[in-house]
Image (cartoon, rainbow, N blue to C red; front, side, top):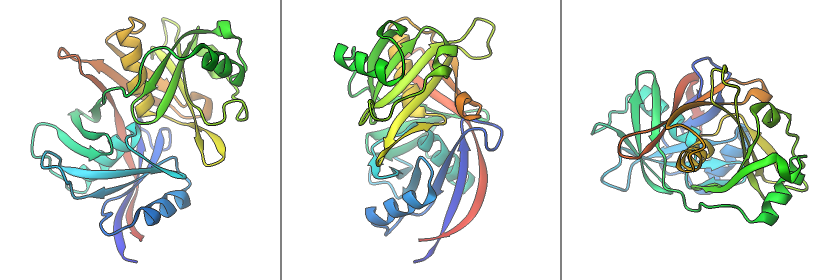
Length: 279
């Protein structure tokens, strides 16, 4: 084992401990996938990342992203948190954008003042869910089928199934049944009242090993939901989503579709712990 630079970052917040935490090992060289997974499981966080030299000449760095029990090809809050930690540690992008190499390929990250934003990767699967899935999700969330007013596949690495409810308040009342939703990753979204400071409330439920967990703030889900909602005319081309409210967090995810049609998913990050880790 050797000492390696380490940061624990809170993502999608400007205030420490109100976002989604991420463990970042800034030098993952020489570590096996087993060692990475073991450390990830030990952190008891939703994700941990390991920074490596890029294998693609167009990338500034490569990252491997792990959650408890498995490796992910892409995830949003680890993308922003890893980039924040890499920049804090002295990383210098070679071009206008930071370019991250990960399991889905190259992901561009831009700096918007105090925020970072990633270009949403293409959806691997889109379109409406099967009606049997919608009925199952409604039952698993303690809802009637009529409570779900829109739905879609939102797969961009994680296989999210997205459902829209009538209101943000209804989203906050959801109590998922892990038995009914076994094996499903579910994103739930609902519109806020017109005078709210955000446009939508989002919640994300996913399986880690044998348990159903809720993610405080989820970049990959918000990226896919934005592609779905904006594409379907259910959301404006620029909005802010809140997530984590039901968990006592105050995550804010900034969405923007630019003139070229690229959807950018952004938020602030703050380093809460910086030091060395033995791995």
